[in-house]
Amino acid sequence: MSAAMALVVNGFREARRNRVTVVLLAFAALLVLSSAAIADAAVSTIYRVLVDVALGGASAILAALAIFLSCGSLNQEIQRRTIFIIMSKPISRSAFLLSRVGAILLTLLVLLLVMGALFLMELKVYGAPFHRSQLAAMAMLFVELVVLTSFGALMSTFAGPIVSAVVVAGVYFAGHASRDLYIRAQRSGSALLRVLGKGAYYLLPNLDRLDYKPAAAYTLEPSGRELLVNAGYGLAYAAVVLLVATLIFDRRDFK
Amino acid sequence: MTELPIRATGLAKTYRIGFALNRRVNALRGLDLQVERSSIYGLLGPNGAGKSTTIKILLNLVQASAGSATLFGRPVSNREARRRVGYVPENPAPYEYLTGLEFVRLCGRVLGLSGADLDAQCTSTLDRVGLSRAKHLQIRRYSKGMIQRVALAQALLGSPELLILDEPTSGLDPVGRREMRDIILETRDRGVTILFCTHIIPDVEALCDRLVVLVAGRAVQEGSVRELVSTGGSVVEVISEGGEPGVLDGLPVQSQRRVGDRTVWQVSEAAVNDLLRKLLARGAQILQVQAARFTLEDLFMKTLAEANAPRVGSEID
Image (tube, rainbow over all chains, first blue to last red; front, top):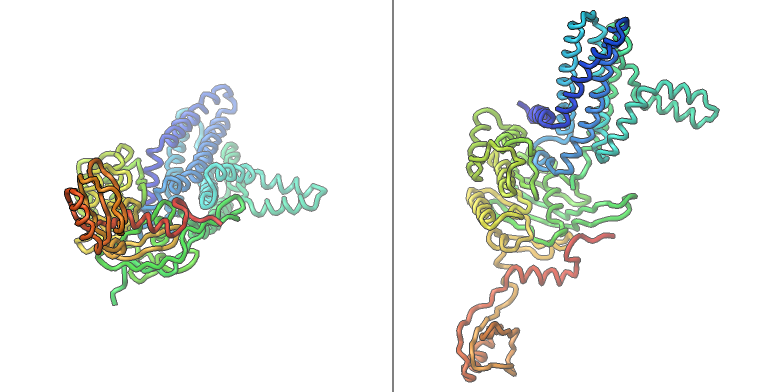
């Protein structure tokens, strides 16, 4: 097992032994299962409500967890000085940073799979149809989590956990509204606002491109090409953010 | 040519602090360092003297503002050079959710060990530091002494040629300190070079072959412990009792103090016979005549006073 892989496995073990992760997983499981109770109240739209609540709940909780883990874990390593021992070993800083990101993504992937399995079981119990658009929505949710985690890692290389979490949460909301922001800014009479809106649109990740929950709720199956292009966009965006993160982390002093 | 384990030239580090990063803390100012193989080299200094900064630069945890440093002839950023180094930080913080064995195994894997070799080395290093019985316990349940030991165990993995220890005995009880010293000496006897940073003077006296005294980021004394303590000159200490000695005129007495019924005198070697004659003439009984020991602590305090630097912390511009 390579040094980086050992650190990924250890990071996953850390998340598994972290109470916050376990509590959030339990909460997410409850939320996914409770979608059935909500759906009972609206028999005519049972399928749509099931998908909306289950996928929406999973998305919100996993996004919160991605922000919590990516903004917290690296900072915790630096503040508690656990990083000193590992970084004195023959491992590059970028390998260390990427292994932390890998550990977080592995944790999120496992949680997503658990939630996905619960969701599919629930569909089966209620006799609701299984549709490939649901899998597409979950796969693209993971790409969105990759983008959020990379932003958290970037912020953690130079800012504290609270500032990092606030910024990444801001990126999450603005990323889902970047198109609206752009349109509103272009309608503005102020040239400065128009430039700022345009800048934000091109700089921020367009997370709406990765949001396939509405399509899943209406069983609209996206084309493979569309999925590939949008997943490629998200992963390329995350790669650039991580590249910047490694450049900053390489120059950081651990006092 | 065999390269020195550590060589540093003109090493300096300035930290920028404050909201606008407009204040500067000069943690290290032009440090030169050469550490020979199979020796224990001490970095001695008050808090904030630059000891930990030096170590962090050597381990590439902090980047020097000026100067250069090499480990076995390679830049400190070189990963292969770090493979030959074991490090115990000040107040080590291993992952507390792991057991001692899990943590040491993780460090072994990061070092590149695997399979039977990894298992054997983990077992032997944990045995060596006396943690074999507690290796399956989570580190969050360890005492400070046990944490220090597990940190030392990971540092000994991979048979390092250089061991860098930052305050390894700090916070340990007397038994723990003694055991830590024994392990350090035993490691040196195996041919390992040790760079050892502390402000506990008895540890330096007991362990170090050579040392540098750092004050406010500058090296103000460097040499073997024997060389440094001998710079105090030849002073003889005489202990007398009775005879009401009072003040002895005409003798170059360096110091005179009462301890109960006894008087302790310190005079130069040349004046000792005169002192003894005068004391005997007054009916005093001579209890002891010995060479006065100029301790490392005396040297340290004298150096600190002469350096005219803050006793704690670095200089801020």
